Image (tube, rainbow, N blue to C red; front, side):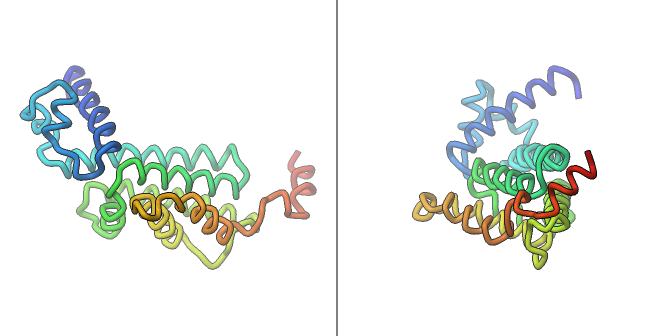
Length: 197
């Protein structure tokens, strides 16, 4: 892709991200084109359908979540890393209201344009969960599929006007049930830190 075409595409994605954050998954393509100061034909040349545009936006966000998990693995305690990633996951899904159904469908549909990004994102979350479980700070009776489902459920809560005011409280309830205690409560942590230092 030529540099100017990529610049135009990136501009359209940035504007679309703003519009979809404001209006949800049913945002008008015509409105996105207008806000981007371009014609609808130009938008459709880059993204022939709303689904194609939405998938491009989501792929970028999901790939960023995957990368963020890698950063958290090396910079945070296992339980903090898991909770931080889960909070970011919910925030991304909330930014693109109405995305939860697409996300859940894509993970089971190899032909979906979102499938690879969703699988990578779930694998990244699974690694964070496994790390916290190995440290003894997360329940061991859940796996990556459960974590992905819980994250989707928490994101769905934010999309419900009647439940949105309770969403943060319910996030804390779910996290407190999943994370069994701060790593600092582990009596062996200090000894391990001294041994590793």
